[in-house]
Length: 370
Image 1 (cartoon, rainbow, N blue to C red):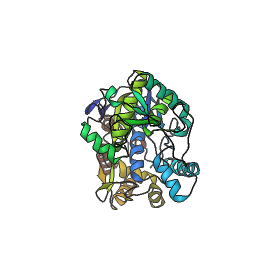
Image 2 (image 1 turned 90 degrees about the vertical axis):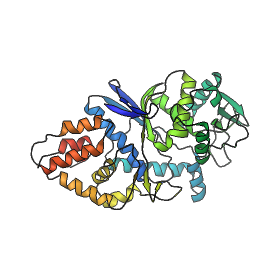
Image 3 (image 1 turned 60 degrees about the vertical axis):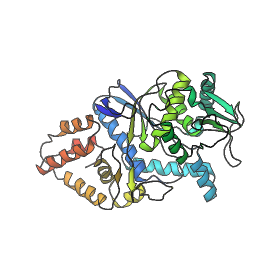
Image 4 (image 1 turned 180 degrees about the vertical axis):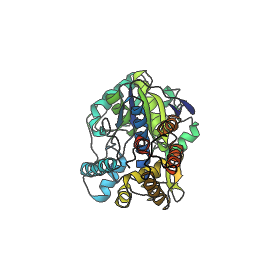
């Protein structure tokens, strides 16, 4: 199998051991899952299916970020308790992923369960000289880590621009460098707080994933991923703090999924340009939603339009008509082994169907139920 590695900037062999450890960044549970979420998790689902088909075991951890500003902001807006809101949305998300026929996560830990791990992790980073205390917070010192930027390959100015757009608070006067990022911070009066050596507060966003990934999967992970919007700052910061804490490689292979767009912008709750999966599933079969997503290469961003689902449903029905011998399974496998080329795999299956062939096993490899 060959996959594109974000940090290396090219397609490289992916050669894990018998057990493949994977970590995919999960949801912040303050609203329903949209098609962008589904596209990301479906990609890693197909990857797991092919790896298992090759004889590997897969352990894919998908966290729940239930300590984060968007959740607290939504709780304030709605008047709901933040934990109750999070629990409700996690339940909705789980039902949606189950309906889409996703392989169940190896584990799905919550950030609220990570506090002891986070506290120990921060201590390791401080002891290594890669963090400092200021203004009641603890910050990672990017100047102490020359490899900062090795995942995203962005210039400092590009990093500053993106950090400012994504809540990085580059103007924080307590920072030595505007790109320094929070490991621990004081909580607002209506936010949860935990005791620490640095005062009552809560973890920063990035450190939650590092702590959970290492707790669940160990110091070095075979593959880590999420949407391309997480490359910086989230995954860049994760990589730096994790390696600073342990002195070991954090991720062997970085894999990122392109954005699903609508009206020329990526789907996001802030813009409100969303297609919710629950709404699609009320009208269309889950396998049709899969085919809609898999018709696009995972690294490409693509634009949603209303013609996509009828075309996917038509394709699904055509696949169900084949009744001869199945001959294309190995060709489909070869497509997935070359950077998870699902569009080419779908085309090969379409051609087999036109010849009257059965495609049940090939569809199953993609998680499509005929």
